Amino acid sequence: MKLINRPLLGILLLGCLSLCLAACGSDFTNSTAPTGVTATAGKNQVTIAWTPVSGATSYNIYWSTTAGVTGQAGTNGTPIFGVPNPFTQTGLTAGTTYYYVVTSQNANAESPTSDQVSAIPF
Image (tube, rainbow, N blue to C red; front, side, top):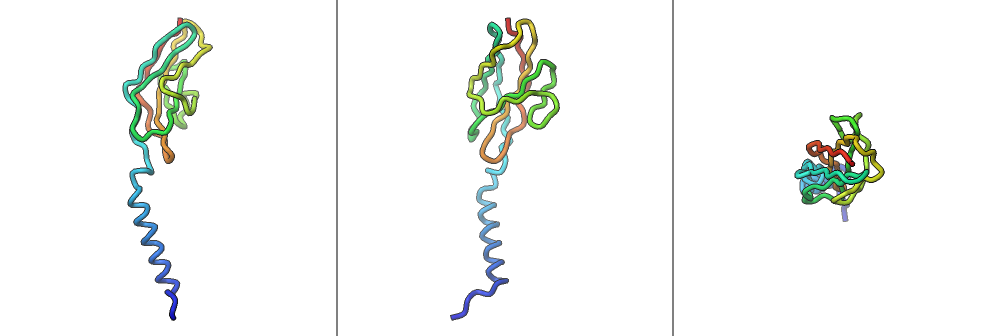
């Protein structure tokens, strides 16, 4: 009985791998940014809420006291990872404007950021 030669085995394995990657191609990205994001001020706190994203396993919030929050690996925005929807950030300074963006996350990638929202706690 003759075994499959190595070059043929390599081609078969490569073909199987290609089919597997093609079948799950949409799982390698998560391009849907959260929408409907709101920021509601309270006493020394802000509550951020958004429309859930289909396929998201978690959400991240990036915040700053300076407009132009970039999120992800950006230079403007402090991350809070794995937050529930809605999320309340407490211990804030009354009268200060806080800016927020939200991203959705799945097992493979983080989405682009949502539109920026802001609120001023009292």
